[in-house]
Length: 128
Length: 220
Image 1 (tube, rainbow over the protein chains, first blue to last red):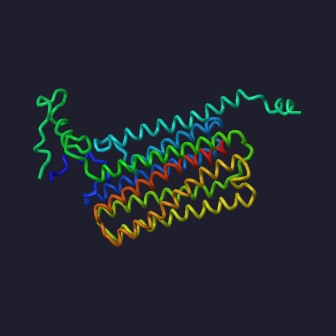
Image 2: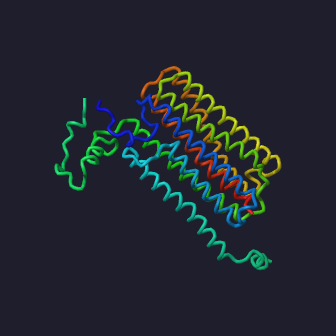
Image 3: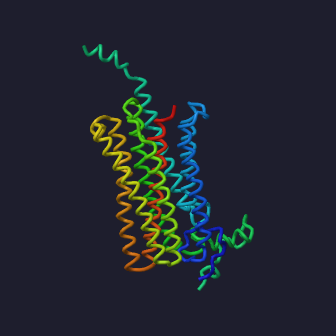
């Protein structure tokens, strides 16, 4: 076998035949752990503190959650921009599209239906 | 044996490519030019497709929960945030230790692999115990899955994640036994890669759950 031409092309920690990369792999997992812990603490802090403007707290939670999902994808699941990951990234993009359609589509449709409903009190009066 | 040296480009002038990029592309894994991708790349790609479809399924549960919770906002119980924080910590540390176990396996260190897999499982079990404690507490207070739309959505979503963790623990035990009995064969290592992908993906789903199901209720 020819030796791997470009170390940077490979996802960190995914080579089944690279025993010498232990400390580098561990370093990557430690960075991921530290960032994930930081974002988790930030999320739990955001709902308890008075420092953040009240209506902004949900936005902060969403931002922290998406950031942490990104951290997990990069440092734990090794989704990278390397050539051996192109297929994974494309599949991920498609997955994100479907998740977005399902979640926001459902919320949008249900909110719209709710908006068009007869108010509950009026409905009750009609049934008398 | 070198597949790379016998590689002859279709475009001999390499229009639009400087030499460095061209050689990197030719030898890069996964673009077809350097020969077929290694099997573990193909296997983890297939498993990644499964994980994404699993996440799409979870997104339907998330959507159902959000809709049902939005229609009955006063139904939400006062969740114990400290328990949720400990659960989150358990799952995160478990995910990290699973990564260390995968690194140890790549080093062919049997005892370290088994040790870190065991720790992974213990933290996963700790997470499950706390979740079961919370579930039984809710059911005892008549907030079970049949007691209202909010709780149906909650138990479906969080319970489905819990079932995934349970299945993951069974898989973890199987992997420990297989590594012990069969050693670091390539097929066993590929299974271990798939398991660690599964375990990390469960952590991603949990990030969504603790942010949008638990913490969102405490937002002012």
